[in-house]
Length: 296
Image (cartoon, rainbow, N blue to C red):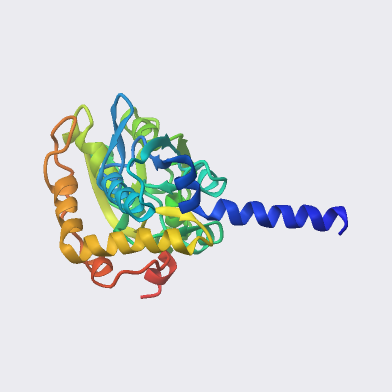
């Protein structure tokens, strides 16, 4: 066997080992959860290394199921903060075992990672200051629009037929909180992002009454937990756990807890009632990409 074939074989063995997440977790006695610093009620820090949120709790439930399946008396959970730019690579290279943030399931990303069944269906919206004069896409022409590096939101805006022929400057924040600050400080006129992230950031702003979510729904996007590709055994455990939560009503209770009730640390409400799209995703569990939603 020549050196090239040996290298290819070694690569294939490495890839297979990387994909076997259950074995990796069992051998390490630990699981690494990818978490976000500012993904609204889905995932955010409380300080002292503690992360909370709707998707964080779902991940914690999955980890308990993994521990039971592996027959472990103890399983350490490690939290790895990720960003919009590095979340996919960190899952791919094995640094993160399961990403529990606000990642949209789309065809392009499915080439790199796998998604669990959809747990939240997002609507991309526009946030702005009340006195900006912006009420929808039409008023974005000639304005500065903030979004977060590594996200799909401004791409979605540009593809919207109502944005045809418009010109606006893109201003990038390193994370969602930074993007909101760009708008809050006047360096951007609007912030285009997932509606629940916008609502969560507004609720935590110094003066929430100064901001509002306006205009059309720019896109409908399924959000899900992210795991490595070609790892059917791990995906089976993840999906089965989430589907059980859907059927038992546990997922609905978690939604109420994080989106309709006061949440820490400020005890403010995000205030987003359960959408029909999310309800439908729970009724018929699936891992379809956002492109399937656009075709409806």
